[in-house]
Amino acid sequence: MDVVTTLKDSLINKYTVGGALLIVGVSTLITPPMSDLLNRVWASPMGMDITLLRFGGLLTTALGVAVLFNQDPLGVKAEV
Image (cartoon, rainbow, N blue to C red; front, side, top):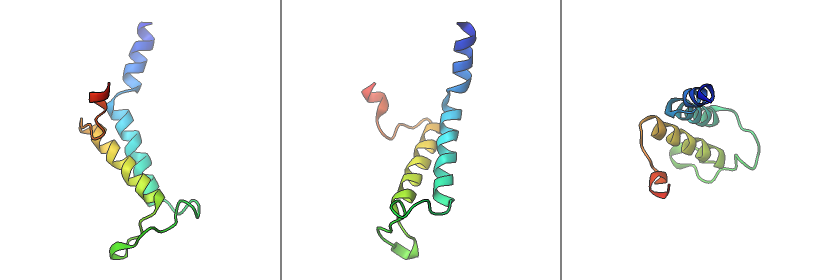
């Protein structure tokens, strides 16, 4: 069991989880459109289109940064 615990602790830590969230969020923000539904423009302030996909990418990127910097923006620690 010691090997399993060591492997789990090395794979599931703030750097791997935060890094994965950051990579997924940034790639969602900069990739080409995936579907018409996810890329329906809600608004275009200052010439920048706001879509559901970009909003999700921004949220995922923010969560990745929060994990890497030991922040708890959703209040998970208070609930657990």
